[in-house]
Amino acid sequence: MIARRPADAVEQYRSVVQRILACVTEQVLTIRAPGGGNPYGPGRFPRAMMLADGRNVSLRSPDQIQLRVLMRFELVDGRATGTGWTARTSEYAYTLLFRTASNVSEFISYHWQPDVRPGVRTPHLHIGPAIAGSSMQIGTRTVNRIHFPTGIMPMASVVRLAIEELDVEPLRSDWQSVLAENEVQ
Image (cartoon, rainbow, N blue to C red; front, side, top):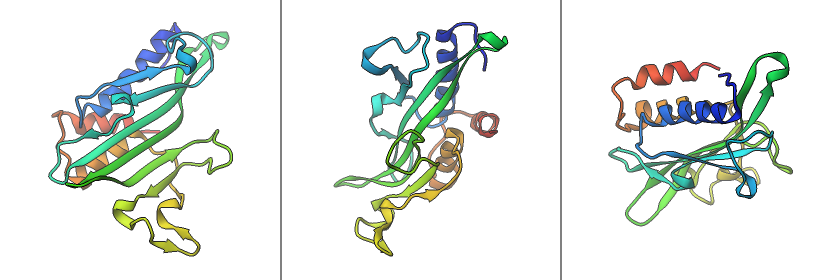
């Protein structure tokens, strides 16, 4: 999406992601800038966007599935080429968790952290301790430490996984069309 002002680009971006998440939760996204700066102002610094201030959010599901969403994005100034301001994802961590009577445990987490050094800079999946346990090993590595390559994972695909495969109850009657229009890369 293209905007005339930086604040409009930020709000358009937040609105799209919020619409996707509204398929499974009523919790809202918050946006922060480094050092407490203005996240709606110009500048190419990364902004943080979190669901429920980075807390786990319970979804409506028979298996007590939870979701945690942490993203970073930056504004791109295209005014010199006549395209205006746009926001683009620069990093994400989408985590699905399972809650039992005694604890909450990750079962899958999609990451893309291209600027983290040292580390895996390509999109990948972690299989969490809820599936593999904390001691299951393949070779010399515990399974929950392996970075399984995925390609870029749209937020809409994670929400679709939750609804279609994990029996999370959708909160919107139009969830299929909302997700379909936002899964295109």
